Length: 198
Image (cartoon, rainbow, N blue to C red):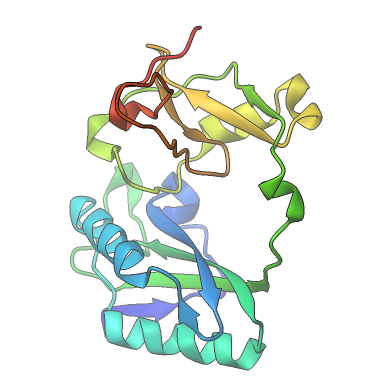
């Protein structure tokens, strides 16, 4: 078994101690995960980069399907956390131990306001650059917590996160995409070399 389902965490769990894990937030349609191949590819790549045991995909997707079928929602929001498991002192861990998996399923309703425009702000908290963690949805989210607790947050629907070079990285709880055409000026995310005023 490459992983075990986790329902509670012990004090020596490396997820609790160090945020030693990765997660995916996914839309489910009926009992299927929308864009599963993309979520799985990122999850697998992240586990490998962190030298964490990769869960068995077939067993994992079967458990997700079972949980979703039991819920009987038209649309569901699924959050899945994959963590290393037991940790040792001094940031060490047990070699080749099975990872732990925890997921939640909740009904999801598309908000009409999302299609009518959102009130968006630029967060004062900036994201640090760490190439080793780039592209990984890891469980160390303290920068995002600080940004969410900024005084202006309650006046807006979403906050945009920049790095210290004023590159747009992403939203607090969303990805950023832009529809642009050749010959027009438009703002794109850092992955496309955008720059916003500080």
